[in-house]
Length: 84
Image (cartoon, rainbow, N blue to C red; front, side, top):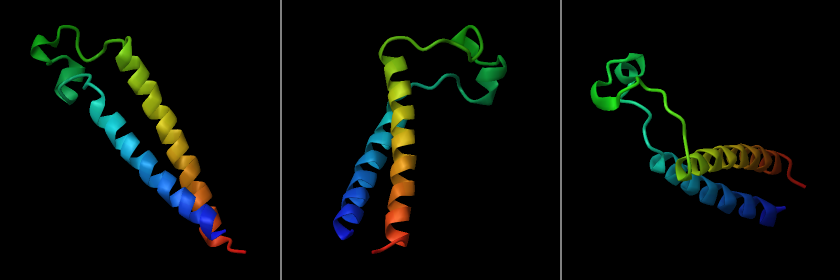
């Protein structure tokens, strides 16, 4: 069981680094709350725009990493609290 716990711990670290990179790579939608309401200045159209191409792929990949991180976290907690 210790090997599974170690593997889950390493996987959690790798997922956290990938998740951090995925969040930092994403482009901001607007300049904060003012840009969303309509005071965005040169953004032209408030804060709403659709994601296309690579931006869309990064967005959905980040969500997949979030789900994988949560599942891994729950599995790691379960393994560490139920030793055999």
